[in-house]
Length: 367
Image 1: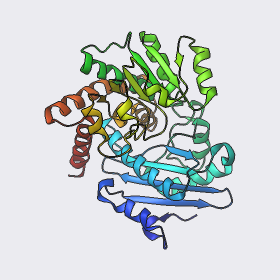
Image 2: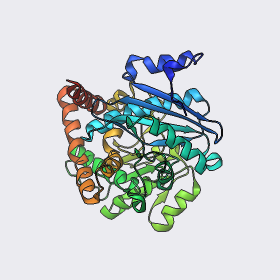
Image 3: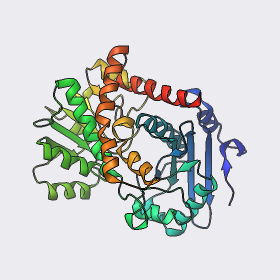
Image 4: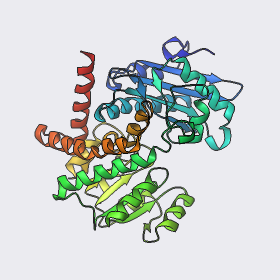
């Protein structure tokens, strides 16, 4: 099985090549296009940086509208992982993989094994884990072909579900936001809206309810909403994200589904004073962070507060210890406060402050 980089592909869409080499993307080191006709696998593995160590990031399984859209998502997600790992203090660079297709329709053992062989071909430059559309059981299958696989089940030497600490980290980011904005980290009595109550969101609901927050939820999947309401009848539901972001009296908005939640349509109508959620790439385009700041909305950078999961899977490579990981994820509170302080000092939005800190850490590692 061969590995083909984008730079070797003849006749590739020029937009893909322009995206790969565009300076504002941060200069990806390598992008691999993977195809296994026998299993139906089509995948993209993007390595943004290995300055701090082997690239680490999850595998997203999603029915993209086009291969170009899949490549763009892999590039954006892998770049975000470089920044996330840097801010989490991990000895890892950023990488991400996407498998093209509906996992409900095409995910098979043969496809996952083929994918594992492609990751293995990179010789440890990229370490994979779970993401949207992939689960612990999937990583157990991938690991049969690739030893650079994390997020496996405890029975197979792994750490299990990384969404547990992802939610915990977002909760710490919310506490830091409350401390910065209202002078007290408690969320008791605060009204929090969560868009997406899947793998991460439903754990976040429990953290908030345990502290006495009022929680409003929505999800495109009715079964996800039912699961939360069955477990926590006090939770309020709304029809969709459009209704959620307009909810009166909302203190915190937590996007916990796919990226692009903060855009030219949503930001002008947000009622929340804080945005802090688990979704990756929440800012739809450059400039949105300034729009939030201009409206007086405090944004906790997504790749900072959702780093609990990557902290967990990174620890798996060294012999997993949950208490050690939770202690490290708890430091997301301090890191978030550091970013808010830097933003105030430099007179820039928190997203720009986080980027500056992460970029400096990566630059220092190269020297």
